[in-house]
Amino acid sequence: WLGLLGLLGLFGLRKKDKDPETH
Image (cartoon, rainbow, N blue to C red; front, side, top):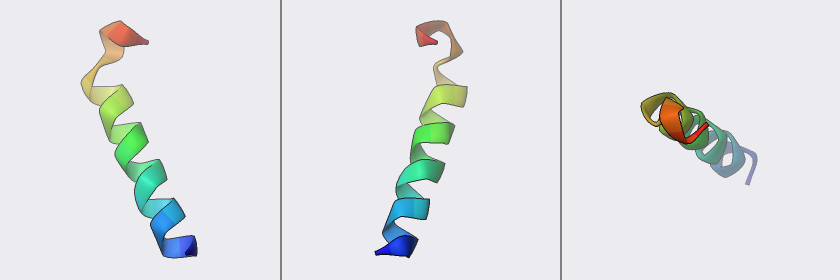
């Protein structure tokens, strides 16, 4: 499940970068 966690983290990071205004 470690891989899943990493993928989720990457996705979240990408979403944050895509929506900096929401930051």
